[in-house]
Image 1 (cartoon, one colour):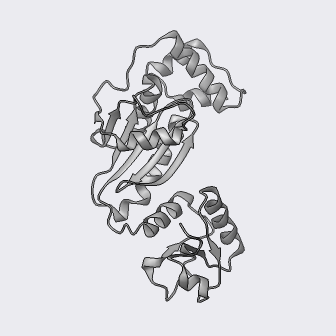
Image 2 (cartoon, rainbow, N blue to C red):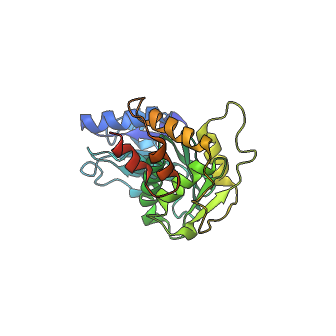
Image 3 (tube, one colour):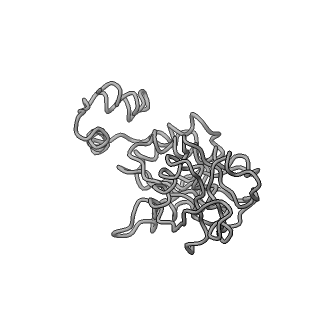
Length: 253
């Protein structure tokens, strides 16, 4: 993206600061300008508030407010920049593990990526992304989940199935989606691009091994920065699906 493609035009200092931080975080160049100024006129997309957007071409504007929704803003911005008005394909790729990599791919374009520390948060990000594009997308989305770790894949399925129809889910063989030094985000992108198989009734159930118990204990330590420890009995209850991971985190608090 060239520097003139994105312009922030608002006199609200809080909104300006928040938008700038988000754009820096996703490494997107931008200019800050006055509405009507030359730089705003040259920009492909203008980010501003609803009060300041009057008279602007809606196709060039992304509206933000004080209570900034980062994901909604970034998704709307990327769709504008890529000239995607009516998406025909929407896929969320999920790379389950100690860290969950997430990727939103629309019409073959990577729109947003995230890293999440827990399956519950990964599911929340996924649902937030789907909600953000709900108005502009008429087809059914697809959520593709990697199967490199049966335990972490099952944890994510248990969380997301509470909120979406099972028919939206696919399981993807992760072979050749991860190489040495590659990030969880990159793996999630590759998973999103790969065709999977439908999720079956028992895909969120797996054979429990001692390594799973230890991995779960380590996950809780990681999520809580070492402040919480889990008993073997509680870990097994979560692995069996009798209790949720969120319950375990609450119980150890």
